[in-house]
Length: 472
Ligand code: GLU
Image 1: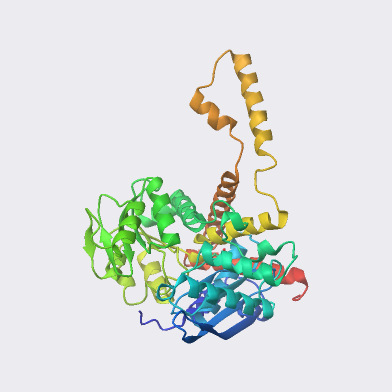
Image 2: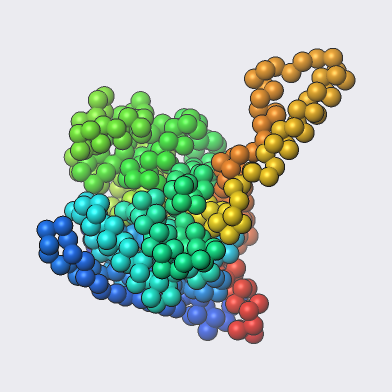
């Protein structure tokens, strides 16, 4: 895939060290923040549909328990290994700290290719993995709360919550043992699109900051910007959707079998339907094929969104990237070598550990919903609507004028769960963008936005350790 010098975990450590220099914390404390606290590496047998026994390799790694529960997704991929899960767990700690989600970081991985297993096999693997986590006390609403990641989604989360509940009968908060569940199983409206929507909110805010736009040479705002998206999984699909709806043009979409390009703009829904029907993204009507998928990363565009896997932009191809802004929707798509190249070229890299934090932010809302046992908006929606109707009536009486019907509906509307979740996510992404940019601009020595984001994360985790009384 790449010729990077460092493993993924080493890359995270390298970025951490680069930022730690801009903080005032004791060396021992920094070492503790960086270390992965608990590593559970497991192997278990699963009987496949053809009767064969396969030994499955899997992990759950808790990077930090400075706040509990720990939080982070579970990925299904053949590339899963301990180093990768350690890196991803670390990123979760920093991500949660930046967006003020009160969790420690964790991550899980099962080394399988989901495409090569039947749904029944995947169910057996997921349920057995969950049982292993329960046995070792590595899952629970107050311990460690998994979520979807690459190769997993609502279906897998449903199997996890069901297995957990059957092993822990009567545990009243059991639904909070995992997030990203279907609504019927305790999920929250808005979780499915959360990461993509968060990426959009984050980049939109970056595009609204005049100093940053001056650096990139772009005009402010997302309207009319050309965007290339790598990956049409959950994150890439929704990122493309919100950018298109926000007035940007998705000029190319890349998947592992190839990429497609259309300067006039692509519609992600149509591309998704085409891929489902034909088995490939290629030969999409009106678009040009790019047979070598990686070439799409080097297209002329304003914004490049890698939304697939780590290390896709590295020392080899970074020099050829022509985008002005790179929004890291995936975890770790750039290597440290790529970072250096982009910093030198003035390309703005908006870092993963806050840009893709929309998923975990809405997971936090889901977990809170599970602990409170009540849907968002249930208590106040009608009250707000009645009050708004009353206020509107008074205004109309006093002015003698009538408000237009279309306006009336939006003024009277009381918040549903989805409205509150989107609003909470928008607030989170806007305020964390501003916080990171403020740190970046407060010290001219801080070379890039990733380093500023790490400084922000390190400070928050360090304060929490100090306040726990562990470090002086
Ligand atoms: N897997 C997602 C991430 O990398 C979401 C994690 C979560 O919701 O806990 O951020």
